[in-house]
Length: 95
Image (cartoon, rainbow, N blue to C red; front, side, top):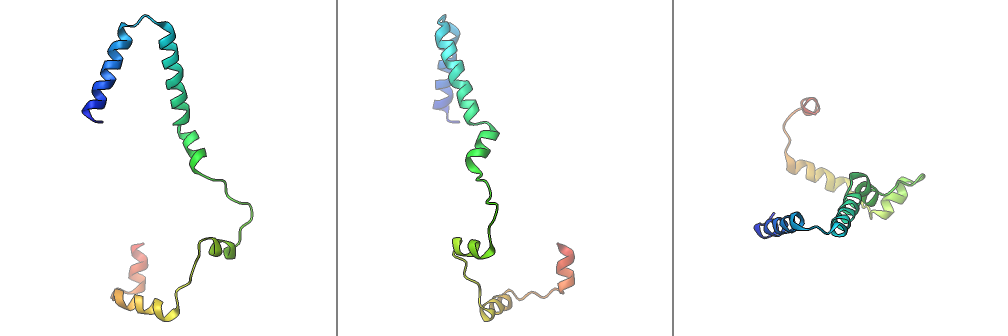
């Protein structure tokens, strides 16, 4: 947090300590409770995560994501550039 924001918070706290206005306190309590509801992990999860479809095919996903497969020659040229020297069993053991 920035110093300015901390200063503002402390000023608000000081004013709250001084106040005798119960309606103000109730209003602030309600507002804070509403903010907590919106930022609760369950609410955030529901806002961000979309439910999965019951039926989806690989072809539909490929179309939606504009998937373009790598050509065989291009793929093997990329693997040559990596110049992996370890044995395949050694690499698999590292996983």
